[in-house]
Length: 302
Ligand code: ARG
Ligand code: MN
Ligand code: MN
Ligand code: MN
Image (spheres, rainbow, N blue to C red):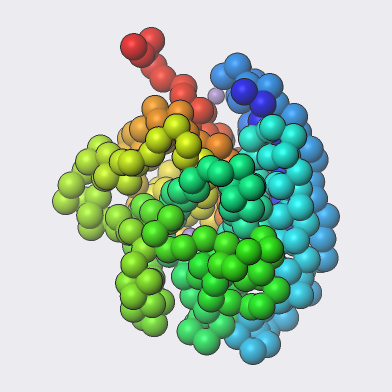
């Protein structure tokens, strides 16, 4: 299995500076070596480049819209190229706005190759805001809505197909912070959501069985892993921490059950903010989770 690491050092979509240092922190935590140890053919493509963070207030409901478009176009093009080359792209973010670029490229590739796309969104947040309803203007709170066709014109047409995806292709896990209008909108759009209450009541095993049901040989599974999915006690270095996330054991089980499907074909690792970390522990934690996503297990499994 060939994988390509793509660094996307952007924080123009976030409300805190520093996610732009995420790719390097993941490298320092040994992401490439740990993946190689899993038997993967790893190529590190280096970092994409894009505009610096102008650190300005929102304009018409968006902070840094032109900068976000530029980073996402670069991400889209790089991801599409790696997929064409038969490699599995792993995006090292960067804030979660980059998922618009990565997933629109994946959606385009699936359309061209006749694959069915399913998206697993591991996050404390639904990221389903629009410019009209966002309380912050931060574009990392909007990528799922944009992918579904609600957002800036350039963003929603990035993949050359409108909309890039439909809400029924998305399944969200770990949700525990949704803004007032966003809550109503994401419900109306019918996104499949397993929030923390669902996980509390039913357990992670049952939750993942539901979330992963119906995958078949023709399914391309994209995993968008926002590090703030994890409980802040194990992953403090994110800009938008929310208490009450999956524990170390629950998160591992989630990752292992995804690995068991053998369907993951692209991955975003986003929102890691090394400026907020202690001795890179959150990057090390993220790499630990990624190893499980790629099938690391304690025992030989039959
Ligand atoms: N809902 C909040 C907002 O729109 C927070 C979004 C956080 N998103 C993220 N990818 N960390 O500003
Ligand atoms: Mn989040
Ligand atoms: Mn997110
Ligand atoms: Mn290790």
